[in-house]
Image (cartoon, rainbow, N blue to C red):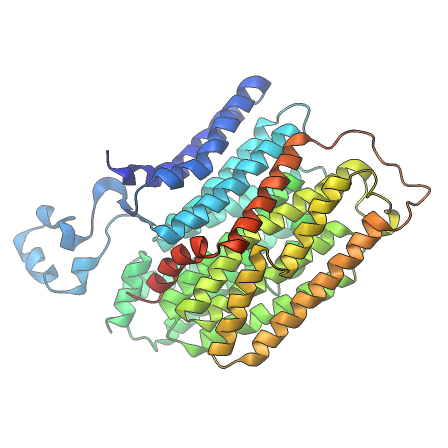
Length: 504
């Protein structure tokens, strides 16, 4: 059996699960069974799938016999020997070692989000699980698709589902946040669509590989002002998707208004959007130094603003949210430097952020579970009430800061090396300083929540921490350690994707 048949199933399976759990919303047991089975498939299918391309409708590139058999002889004569031979007439999903690694880690995060949602609620919500599965499907499609309009379609689906996850969280102020994010999403999505429309008008194609070929072959003037304007539109859409400035404040607010399981998937959208739309911009417009400079400038600003805003917060949910947005800046730095090594480092940082930020969201979710408050000024003395969870939360914080031997240390070290190699040592110094400040911020949080005396008015629930949540935290810790000690198992695969992004 052709293993490439599993490529579209990576997106189809979560969509089917989403529809089913929504239809059987009132049937608790059946909803759990379908959700668990579907969640297990998310990391499993990328492992068993075969590398290759999937062409929807079976229409391969014309040079491979795609539509040529159905075209008249004079059309074949025109196409033969031209760039049209390489065009992709169908929506194309590309699956290689890099995509496999990203999808596997994303699948684990999505699976754990589903498990935690089931474990921490008395009655399983089919509607909530529908949102989790639909957002997972959109993110999986993000990674696979080589069609920029298909990317936009799933971008809009993901944007709407994110609003849904905010609205069903029942967190105070969630409706206001959801409305603001939806309005900004309409602007960001419209700008992204405008950029795609301009690219379609210039290149006659929506396949990203075909667009790149048209520009680099000279069929489209690379200095065309319309092309430059399209680059600006795509960058604006990228900023919205990632939550980089000027969207850092609303993105951090979105994270803080979601449930822990929802926040895991919400931040995954930012990470996956950062690398997929970012790589698309690099592939199409990488020849423009201005584009790389803009990506670098915004990314550095995001890192600085992220840690600066986090340091003045009293709500640990907002602290983690701002830090998560700031950490995306490191990914942007890797993309902006524009070398195979730097892009590999940026992708490595993205894979690590998928795990570490989820680790922190569910860890601090346990603090909320025990105390029913997210205000640091009202907390203290939790170490004796949840010692194991406290240790895991501290380790997760140190991991985000880049403390060895965990995975983020390896990716940030690679980013510093890439900056030095590119002749920008100042950038490496900035990243090192901000990592140290992040470490100090987590020391402050650790003392305030776990070590200082317990306030007299703080009520701590006697309920046991859910075993499923603890198991997920141990799983994330193991992943962080394994990747940190053996980074080659990830970087060797991501390097293939980085190199392909810079070649036709």
